[in-house]
Amino acid sequence: MAALEKGITANGTGYGGKTWNILGQVYFPKAITDSTFAFETNSEPGQFVPVHVHPTQDEFILVQEGTLDLKLDGVWVQAKAGDLVRMPRGIPHGYFNKSDKPARALFWVSPMQKLEELFNQLHNLTDPAEVVRISAQHEVNFLPPEANE
View: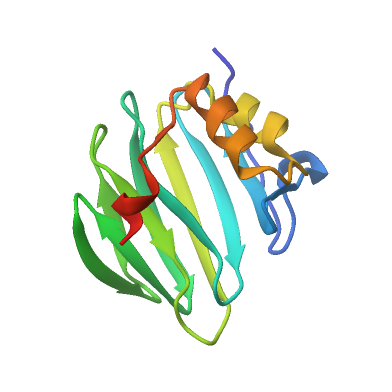
């Protein structure tokens, strides 16, 4: 098990200097251990992550700036700066920046499982179908497109 290192991951940077570009969104890893995985996202207007399920992980989103619309277990909800979204394992969820302003959020998932490996493989991919295929191999299962309506 990887131990949590003490220290600070500065604003606008990723742990160890790492960043990921996943279908145009910039992700910054903030803390990585076997027990938890924290990362920051920066979503421009119109960007989103379609509805998906983590069958073996709980996930949280702390909205830091802007507003995110979420499809959470089939229901549309909205989270604003300062709000914490709780997504238990097995609950379908997706997030969407439907506003006209950028949104920034801190995500964390527990336990990490295969997410760091997944993000490493998704970095700079441009084919959504390939992203879905690789994600399924890493315990992230996307629902059909109609789940996003």
